[in-house]
Length: 113
Length: 148
Image 1 (spheres, rainbow over the protein chains, first blue to last red):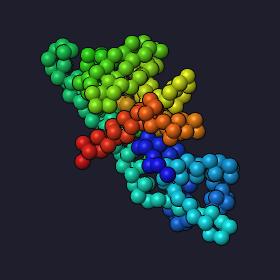
Image 2: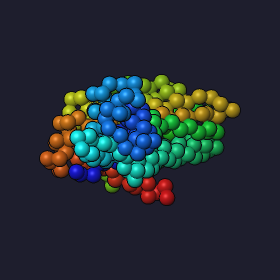
Image 3: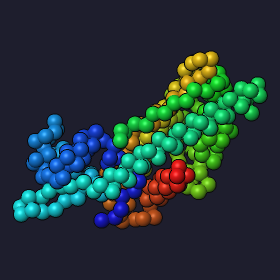
Image 4: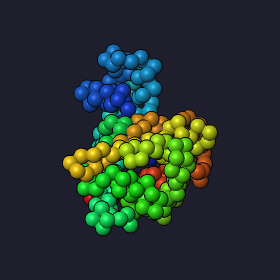
């Protein structure tokens, strides 16, 4: 399975329903699709769809236990997603500070450069 | 990890001065991309260029001088490319004799890949989409390195 881009990782981790599934999996360690569906306010099909997105992004992995399929969080990828979000926020913070610097300099100079 | 990023800053300058820094294509390269072209009207098109990463198309949404400026970027490809894109909204409000500049970037949780795009990416690593994703990944990596 190819590594997901930073973009896909962000999209996978940023959705509130998927975050809820990640929270439940972090609590339980691992769980089946059925077990997860019983604890969320959305349909089994939605659970399946979200798990597929999370799996493609490398945030969860599955294993078979007999006839059951169990999902678990890949914690190192979750940390990576958190860092990616923090990076996006930091990027905007830096841009705002630069705009501040430029605008205040222009104001002090009495004209827009 | 929400689908929205919000940040704000208090600037000791009036809103119209901040507005010019924000929207003038001659000034945008001082805080954002390396180069910028922009048709500053609702529905206007624009391009942000990075020496290292190439160009990104932008679509101007709202232009309400000096209070509100918004645009879309990080679009996909093809006819519906703006459906999954990031929306950036700047608002400027008077505060403490200066200007509170706020930015909200939304749509991070909607940047989902359609099955078709995913297949195209797998099958053709030289496709425009793959290049775009590669650029975005590089941007993230560069910023992460700069943040350390």
